[in-house]
Image 1 (tube, rainbow, N blue to C red):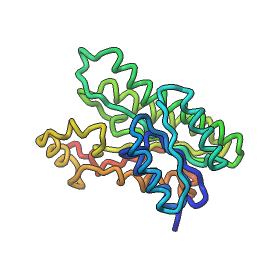
Image 2: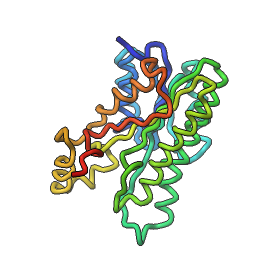
Image 3: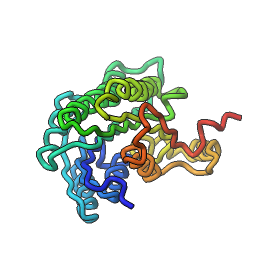
Image 4: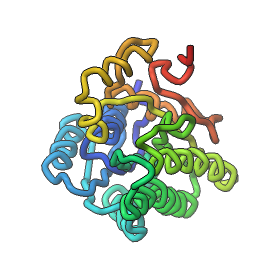
Length: 254
């Protein structure tokens, strides 16, 4: 059963990690896919090739989500290629780990612009197109377990992920009358480009694995199913929700 048959799905930050897994997962479920990426031309093109190998259409659109115009360009090129937007997966994000007391201003500002402002304008651009089309849609934002818990070296990052979670709650209200559903997924510790250097510390990685009831850290592919579900009509009465995808880490407090 293909849950996204005939739909057009847009995914930001999709050349690697969770975004790539979501894009390929959407294609496996019958969607045509437009991916946004910032830097990695090679991985972006290989993602497109994987989607096309599944028999679906795909385009890659380069752009920095920190620039609000990127959102309009991305949605516009997706509509030009596929005629419509059914699903937006707002995933692009950064987390340059740094201590709080000497946190550089430019690091804070860049993190907010990419993670929160970028999500805001992508969601807005997709919603504008969905309202114009008149047949609803689904928006899924990749927040984080960090929306609910703190991190010593993530004082600039955790507020942005809490903001993304809050954005989905508010847009669920604002867009419900248009038949547009807005939900977030909250990944736990997933092995991606963001944290590969941090988790190169063997002791830290083993500690994080021990904290996780399922006994392992997550892979990007672990997010594909939950994202596809929230994007699909199987979640037709789900909006304003936040789905933890963390192997049980959040509840393991004792």
